[in-house]
Image (cartoon, rainbow, N blue to C red):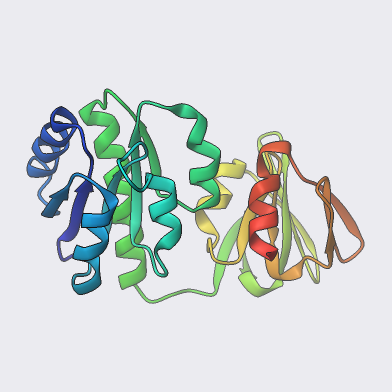
Length: 227
């Protein structure tokens, strides 16, 4: 796999030093520049492409989240901040990870490995299906047929347009197998196919007669999908 080109947008010299040292320690990361504010980073990105931005939130002139909203086709973004209250907004903006300062190297490595895995997935041929273990058989399920997934303790129930399957795995494991472009978690126990939603309110979505609750922390994400 080719290197992951990245930049740092951060106005604290110590934080820049820590991130720079961490990047140098990871073989697949290539640092292309450091910027003290988002305006300078914007100027760089007009003529340069990167795969990953390490982005502080409290920046001079233009705040990190405001800067992120200006990017038409943003690369992977890892938020680096001392303020946890922006985590939900970061989730809505589809950031890859959210690192709290002071950042430990093992947590940094976990975050950049997510970017690496995503890059490898994009390089691989895209599948439009998965196989689920159901009663000692592997059953093929097309992504296009899945309506929603519901947690059932140590199992998940996968409801499709033609059948319902029960397989032993966690909701998180199932979420990681589904394409993020068309499947979103709307509740701690539910993942839905967004293109199958027929109606919604702040509290629920409807998919082929099923009413699925929307968790409080996922409401902003739902609104963002349909604005």
